[in-house]
Length: 68
Image (cartoon, rainbow, N blue to C red; front, side):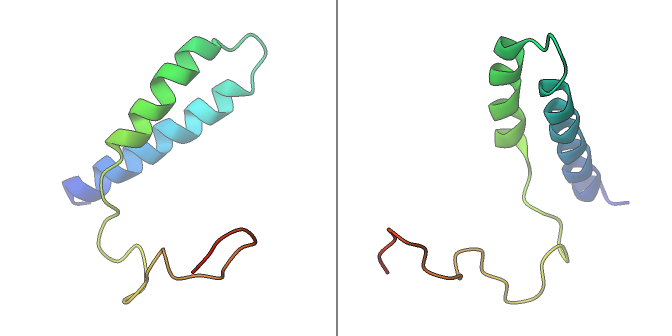
């Protein structure tokens, strides 16, 4: 596995584990609020081939309240 793909997979795994921890009894909310955004901000660009060619995440339906 290439290093770029490993970094992406590791960061996604950490975010999933943090999400599970957030739903446990007695979870430290201050820790979750500090670490969650930091992990999300460190998420690298998705590895090549994650999305189909020509995929545009901004190209989708217009939702109520959105103007296009």
